[in-house]
Image (tube, rainbow, N blue to C red):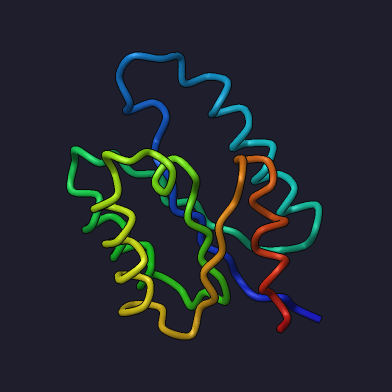
Length: 120
């Protein structure tokens, strides 16, 4: 049974100032690899909040039909990005109205977040 395609929307760690992106990039890669191990097709949309993130998100949402969209913790948990988080939720509702919306705890548990909603 095909579970459907997943889109993961998160912050691009390479575009954020003031910290080492490599550990987060490695965790994102491990989480993305788990999608493959589970037989789930997943696309990534990693954005820079200072560089027209909304346009990149709309482009990603309209590229394919998604069963689930996972919104990453970097967007949700960082209070200065509350405005972006609200925009992401509403962009998903507008451009992928049939997709479930899920939230991860870490980049590595992103497939688990999607699995909570896929196949329902």
